[in-house]
Image (cartoon, rainbow, N blue to C red):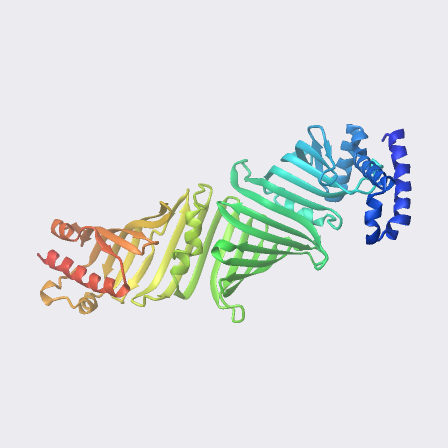
Amino acid sequence: MTKPNSFVKNLKNINKSINSLLERNLNKLKFDNLKILASNNKVILTFVALFFLFVSYLLVPTFYKQGDISKELKNELLNKFNLDFTFNQKLNYNFFPRPHFVSSKSSILENQNKIADIDKLKIYVSLDNLFSLKNINIKEVILENTNFELNTKNSNFFVKLLDNNFLDANLNIKNSNIFFRDSENEILFINIIKDLKYYYDPNELKNILYSKNEIFNTPFSLKVINHKDETKLYTKLDLDFAKLQIENIFNYKDDIKSGYAILLFNKDKSLINYKTNKNFFEFNYFNELENKKFLYKGKFNFKPFYSSIEGDIEEINLSHIFGTNAIITELLKTEIFNNKNLEFKLNINANKIKNNQKFTNLFLKSKIQEGLIDIDDTKLEWKDSSLIKLTDTLIFVRDGKLFLDGKSKIKITNAKNIYKFLLTPKNYRKNIKTIDFNFSYSFNEKAIILNGIMIDGKYNQKVNSNLNNIYFRGSSRQNKIFLKNMINDLLKFYSG
């Protein structure tokens, strides 16, 4: 590296003299003497000279050769963050608001492969040792508008960065993207980084990663702490829009990793135990932390990507799944599941349905495949008298509202109980075995439209002309009364 020129050497000597002079005299200043000092031209000239020399000191890095600057900064970045930067264009130096170098169109290499394109890179340096480029000290690095290219081989890139020393230097990433690709180099998802920071927390005595992100139009925040001495990784995920918080402890010592997570949804707490490796992720979910009452179990395969969740529960609250503000409903509205590479199955057995005791033994079978969402082959019982099965269903969003379209087949198992409940006149009590109809349900308005009614596999023109586009809405009591009248009218028309 070249030594500073004579101008820099002179500035360095003058700077030492100024520092000595300031130490001897500035502490002697009193407030009462400010007016006298202001009228003294020598004092004013002295401060002007000091200001000029300070600015000159800040400008020292502009005298260094571009190759020397690039080399030293690159080495310093590699030593502090273990990141191999490449500067594709000239480094510019600015001293306002604090000394820093700016690079456009930079990149990051890993194993000689480019994994990040940086539109703007800022490297802030300490005010100390500006005279010596060899001793220059990086205090903060900011990456703006960066595109990261990650896959299964380097998916832990951001976690690995926590192993570096952030005690005296921070790393910040803003307005950037993470493109995660599969083995065929197809984009699986894009994680948008709003603001990501690496810093040292003196309370935790650990490096901290805190990030505000967005994925599939879903905003979230993430906090990560790597307890390297215990081979444990702590993460905290916040989904504010869904009022969901997940705290996770991940043990990565063994080949098959394990961990547990505590979920806080509104005021309800639950627990997940899991294990994973590069090929799969399995979990068990409990709804009570103390008694550990079993709810669900599931598995995710990564090669190829496939997931399934099964659960057994005494009572299910469907509003938690498909309610107006439920998590799944909100995710459906964001079109998070409209990815053709995503295949997901959810099967739940429930003995009871909350707030609707007439329906029992629900088997909810849902599937997401090739961007389509359905609950085909979902079954439930009504008053131990009939079996209801859903087919040809489709869940979709239209104008910001969630809808379910499909067909329903009702198999009558105990006609006497049904007629007794409906108070059906005896002359209308026919031996009906099946009822089929089409339906469209709005989750937001809690309204359903029925049409295309068939009885015992036959389409009755009279029935459909009188009961076409049946519309349920309003209070539960009103719907019960309307349902009884509607079915009795249907039987009346059918009896002819």
